[in-house]
Image (tube, helix red, strand yellow):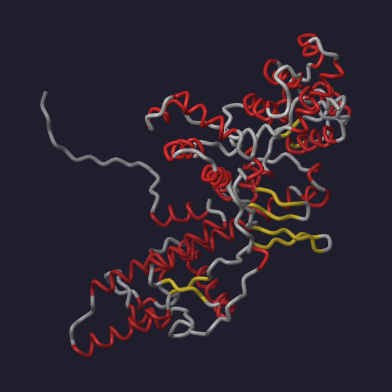
Amino acid sequence: MAFEIKQSLKLGQHLVMTPQLQQAIKLLQLNRLEMQELINQELVENPCLEEVAELDAYEDSNESTENLENMENREAEGSTTEEMLTPQGDDKIVDGKGEIDWEEYMENFASGPSLPSTREIPEELPNFENMVAAGTDLVSHLQWQVSMSDLTEDECVLAKMIIGNLSEDGFFIGSLEDIARELNFDLEDAEEVLKLIQRFDPMGVAARDVRECLLVQASLIFDEDSLILKIIRNHLEDLERRNLAVISKATGAPEEDVREAARQIKEEFDPKPGRSFGGGGDTHYIVPDVYVYKIGEDFAIQLNEDGLPKLRVSAYYKKILIQAKAEAKAHGKGDPKLTKEYLQDKLRAAVWLIKSIHNRQKTIYRVMESIVKYQRDFFDKGVHFLKPMVLREVAGDIGVHESTISRVTTNKYVHTPVGTFELKYFFNSGISSGDGSADVASESVKEKIRSLIGKEDTKRPLSDQKLVELLQEDGIEIARRTVAKYRESMHILSSARRKKLF
């Protein structure tokens, strides 16, 4: 087989993602807090970026917006990066080799004061509502009890190893055999240390399951032959299913006594002893990215830019470049090429970042404007009036791709007159209505199910089939398995487990 080298031409199309396009896509899917972190990082890494002081932001806003709009128009016309960096009408700033005449560029580029502002900003006093005492966590609380006990030094080490393997609910999730082997302990001695910890406060902590946790609590109060201990030891599953008749028949106790024992187990024992020590961690508050206000009969949209630094090209480097240019000409040394190339890259990155942020904010605003237009009844009357909507509808309305809408609505929240919601919340499928009218949004159906369950008789809770019948009376055709799926997605128990025994 002979090999030969030859040239050929081939015409094709392929997608090339420039670094600028990658940056714009990345910015779209960031929420407000992530955006703030990225801007602060760029301010540290890029010397050509400068944060505008609040008093100067208004003066620069109109001029900066006009410059960015000019760049967008010139980008649409197919201009190069250097041409977009050049103020419109100043063709002599870029020479024939595609380099920027920095002196001419900086004289025409919109900037603020020649040096960064040095005005002193009065320090804000801390908010006393944010100054809370540090709570005692479960681990430190148990370790303090270990230090107060009469355990030997080796047993204290074993106890602390056990405490270090507790879940947020207070259950022991480690392997006692592995811990005993690692510390050269006899397994029976390790069991004794574990049982001692289980009698610490809170009672039942370090148990390996719910049954052991409840047995520890009950054994300190009731005798071994008590009905409560029998139920916990042998009939916990039946108690969970509310099968009191089965428990009564198996234990030989009257059903009324079984009911009273079940009440005591529910009200006097804690199946998750670690919860009282804040096992869920710190509370994380949602910061909305967009606000929607109702003013008269119309809705106003406002982006949350609180805390986002206002950016511009540093005026400090304008002065440095002009001085360096003048000194080079005076001494006849020529232009500092490496410095120019470095600052040209940083300046290009700064301008693209400002432009990408501007486009991101504009896109979020347009998406929210389209959502308000499609879901006006929701903003007027509440969740029950949410309409089915897909990404394609908003994408077609504002003239962008569906993937752009998906990125814009990811991890972003809007504060509305009827509550705070994730932007993804407004995009949901529809359920057919029985009367032939418009489809009902799935989120609206979930809200109806939640409302019906909230009004039910706790002694006779509504079954999934009964929920189907009630929804059909409201003109919503839905299958029982769909009701069960929606109920489980809202973390609502089945009717058997929602039933109150007393």
